[in-house]
Length: 182
Image (tube, rainbow, N blue to C red):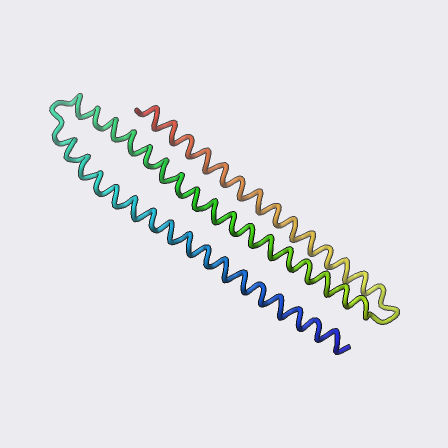
């Protein structure tokens, strides 16, 4: 009896340590992506400030209304292109984060599945006679949990793919609108 409790205790400790390690790795990746996003935003803000000043000077120096409106149209095109570029960079950062998170989650699920299956197999070996129903219930519970994890993983992937598709569509529409404005 104590042997099984010791095994459960060791397995629980190993699972906790593994999850802690994975969580730390994920936090590190999320922090890295936040740093990239902040750097992108700072660069965009600096560029906007510089370009805004230049654009204002150009607009003020326009010699006639036709030149003024031509400058506005060209600046609108440039701004739309810059917005599309910004969106593209942001999408790239998000894609990297998604890939990292997906990889870590899949690795964690696979590792947990292996450890739980090994633990169940070990417990089954030392199960007393007459506990077949309890063993069958335990195996069924583990199987159902694994199926639930796999379904959750599939659903999460589909949701992320839908968001990425929507962002890509919005970026394309923004680019097309910029071309039309020009």
